[in-house]
Length: 85
Image 1 (cartoon, rainbow, N blue to C red):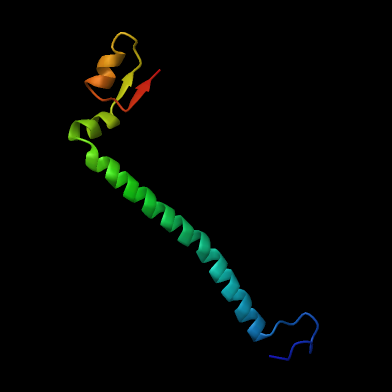
Image 2 (cartoon, rainbow, N blue to C red):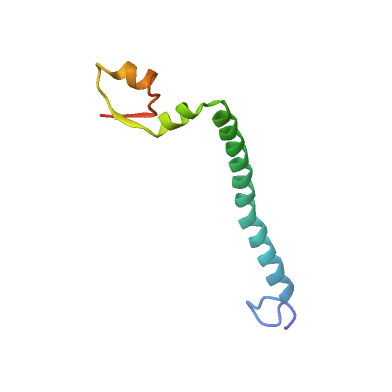
C-alpha cells in the first residue's frame, strides 16, 4: 500500500483498520446495552413469577369475554389475564 497522499483518496491499511475497529465497537455497544436491559427485565420477570401461584400463571393465559355480570368472577376466581370485548 502506498503512503497517505501518494494517490488522492487512497486509504492506508492503518486507516482501514481504525475505521473497521470503530464500526465494530459502535455496533457492539447497542447490543451490550440491550443485553443488560434484557438481564434486568428477565430478573424482574423471574421475581414476579416466583410470587405467582400456578393458578395465577394459568389465569394469565386465559382470555374471557368481557361480561359485566361475571366480570368479578372471571377476574377473582379464574384470575383472567385479559378480557375480550
